[in-house]
Image (cartoon, rainbow, N blue to C red; front, side, top):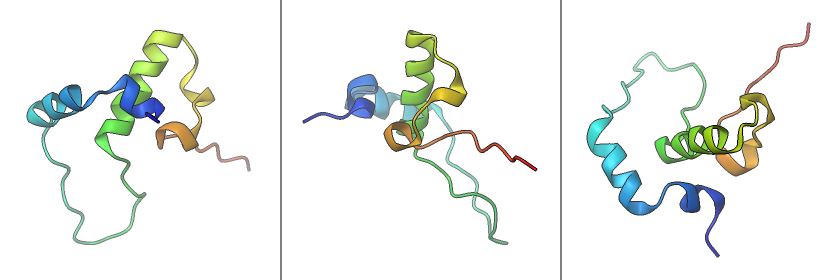
Amino acid sequence: MVGMVERLVPDELGELFQQVVPEAPSRPQGGGRRRHGDREVVAAIVFVALSGCAWQQLLSVSFGPSVVVDEQ
């Protein structure tokens, strides 16, 4: 069964994307948030563009990236 990410960003598009996007910089000092995969991020952008939903409504289970709201 093909997942949402694979449907929105087929292998060919994922490979093309990797050719034009620079590699992520390394963080020798550590810390920060864990980086999400490029393919998942592109799929989330495509989904938002096609569906018209708000970025905050994305399911992190489906795409990886999500908005963290700090309620203090």
